[in-house]
Image (cartoon, rainbow over all chains, first blue to last red; front, side):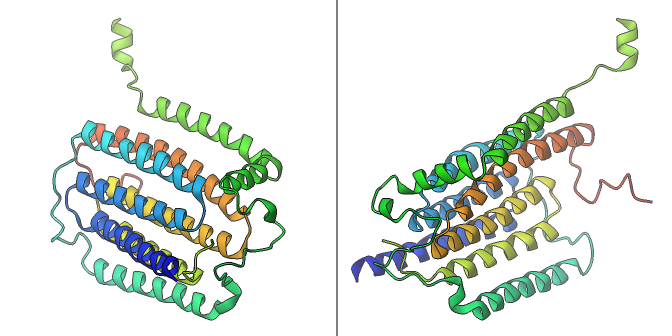
Length: 193
Length: 103
């Protein structure tokens, strides 16, 4: 009973953290503050991952997102010197904000309606009855490493080709970015030199 | 012990996060903040994946999240590279200013 209450507390705390950070991202006028809001959101999502037994993804979330991506954002903000606060009170396109708000509320309403309609087919796992689906090795459910073991077995057997292709993707992304941001010497300068 | 919190709650929270991200993407004009809003939406989708992977007992959902994270990292690297090269030419440009291709 106590663990259930604790789970609810963790759920609501992480949700408040996540949604508060998200509101910070879209409401803070200074991009640096928005990036800090993004960190709050990413930590909230990581807490949700931990409470859903996705330990490896929680760790990757912290390391890759909060550690690398947000640092990259802050680095670019400071490199370009765009950390000036922008005035949010002026609307560039007149009725865009009400339309965007209607769209966002409608999107949320649609997804929430779909969740309600799906009902029990989403799966309602109650405490103490571990899932017995073909993808999960039930013998390792009590093991602390089970999540990482399952994920690794799945990744290195069923999705091996995709996993190898991600390395190609990362190499292409890095090489492309280096080419994109390189300052090429002007043609006249090369002639002069 | 697997969460006693209903998985549908996670889906609703993720939908809320996605809506906030979509709203910010449409409203904000700073390209960096728009990128952050895309990250919010990706995280909302990831949270949905993990919630359903846990509730249905299928590890493939978590593998999908792994790949989404890899692609998101690559996307941020390329996107910020493009932004750096744009903003180096035109400091302080907003998304509305970048209309060279407009017919």
